[in-house]
Length: 199
Image (tube, rainbow, N blue to C red; front, side, top):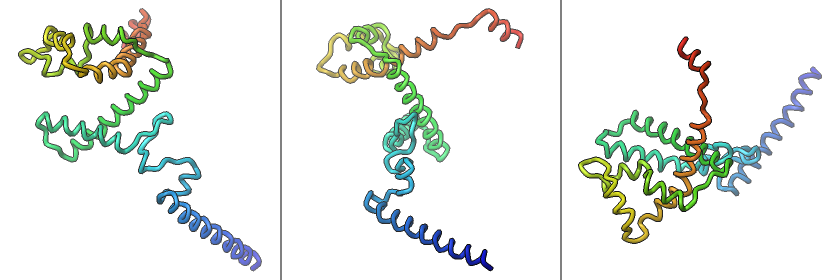
């Protein structure tokens, strides 16, 4: 009998504590735009502003949705019908690309890999990236035309090359350098070849 009384008394304390937490959550949550106060207290992210966090870098829903929409637009341009399966593929591809971009950018920053203006010009002149070699404006008979490309590069009409130069300096060349570092660090020993041959 004493045990039941003790449990009842403790149950009242638990219920009051739950009621206070609920009211506190409703009050403070309303003040911060309906956010869940428990998540805020424990450092969880707000799903309205962050759908994922990659090594501490928050990814917004807008950023992810823009990439998904670009994937779907590319599919439409290719004449594909947009189905539920196509949307799922676009979301998966968008996530994979976003994850890779963020991880590569973080590694580039960690290793302090940069590109000089001279490197930007050298790559533009001698090693144009795929988004330029696939540009229809630089093709003749559906094949990349280096002469047509260099003519456009050497005779700008204004500052139309500025965004490309910025992208090359801040993203493309540092990523290219990182990939070269990774490729050069891969060493295959005679023993590795022997093991693979036996397999």
